Image (cartoon, rainbow, N blue to C red; front, side):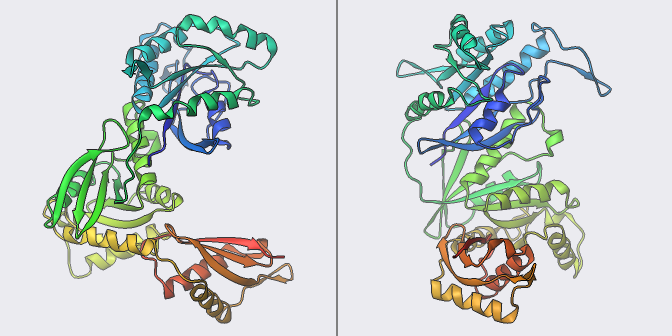
Length: 457
């Protein structure tokens, strides 16, 4: 079931990034006194009282203009450019979110820009059962002392409900705020449990994702229908392929961070990251007609960090001149550039002509089957024993790393817990060796393996 989304909006320097870091419980957003420091959209997972949700820091609202790399004086609050940026961010946030935290600054008091944001939020709320949706919470940040908390009443004039004074820096009042937020998530409605195999199609812009989706929809034995996706303007594609229910998740292209335009495109990238998080298998498309770029590797890295299974699809194979060795040479290049994904299968296709497209879904389903394999404790310990007999762990500071036994504690992705004498003695190269030995016995095609170490006293 998709996690609810909570968006943080407001004018610059009201503490959105500080609150984001507080809710995410780690320092993900850059915090600075200079307004508009957060120029890239950030997303993280958070939870409160057992309820998990996603939080979005809507950075990128910059009240200054830059000419030849030099920042000029801040624009006036009434500047059309400034207001348009606020409006764009707020409109997108309210369209995507299940709840909106409208941050203002207790130290500065009510400003004209706060009025602008409030007006935008009011004008774009829908009415569901007579109540505004998504709900907007009036969060008065920097209420670090009794005086500022008592002055929070002045924000009633914004007409966005009861002001909630907090201090994002110190955490004061955030618990009460989150209690109020999670109580509203039921407004998004109950979701029907979906047990289909989720396959996301991702890659840079113009690599042929939509073309591949269209080809897959037209495959024989595929029954196609449209069902709503996680976002209000996204459509997933539902297929039944060889009696297996599949949800294909098409996504926007992911550009390099510096080339992502503020506003709509940033939230398209957000949807792409959400799609990866929803999926169990990801089809990573690359363009055979252009050189593999650092951005391809960056996307692959994000998929790996999310512990998702991967099939690398080399599209537009019809667009290049080939000889007997072309595929082997391209395979060596891909394996070199994506050396952190040695276990993923490669498919060379043309979505335009249909060449080898018929192999995509069977390969994705095969990878999904590998993802949910579960080894018995005896099977896994036989692999561990063989690995240690072949290559005992090296010593560190006069002590040798020892593995007593291990067990698989979950699948999807396959996760193994090793009981050892001291986790600090385990060098990452030896962990990589163990992973390779596991794959020799059980390949887990296209799927990452997690090794967790726990000291046994």
